[in-house]
Image (cartoon, rainbow, N blue to C red):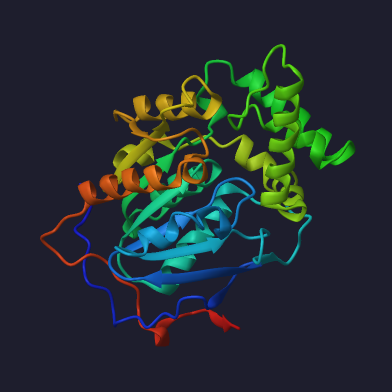
Length: 315
């Protein structure tokens, strides 16, 4: 069982709407802190920045101090050398440094899709910082019985992104992300598929997608969890699956991960993107899961005072 969350140093005076920055090796992270209560880190998935949590974060902030951030190279966060591959370990180290800048106590962590892999590495390598980890449909091809097929497909996506273009890579990626194309689509279905692709590209942005299918891709697509380390950590771990993503890639890998860790998956409303497909129902379920993990005998972790922040305030 995880250590009981304790009281952190000082009382925070974070200002909602302010964007803070934190220098980390090779990058500068952009992050925000708002709300009150136990500290909850939200890790975005894939090419997403903080905006992927725009619908659910304000509701969570009514009960939690919510910490959101743009991973290095995405949205407002920058990297010193955009030609260098970004490993999942580096992403986890960034989250570790961000948490260290905000609190000295273990926190609650929610991560979605590829961000789940970051959360899993964070918990495995910095277990003292994680009280509860909830990961929603982590995409881990290496857990499947046919990883070679997925390795070849992921290599094709990367080559397509570098040679044909991002839009073509998105078209290859979307079925894995839960947006399946019917075997024999009619004109209406084709129009819906085209609109969905445009929405996907507009929502995440061309710069984020280019970075996702570039420096982020190899490590994320080839991530293999350290199962022994995850079995040994004191944190409570919850593996989430969607009600309408049964049989899809990330659903299958989430179930396999849960089996490897001796856990029963927890069902969330919606599909792989339930947080923005059915945000209110998804948030209600997340709050239930978080509440079930809290230890009410001790005061939960809270952020440090502004004077302890290791970042710079950006207006």
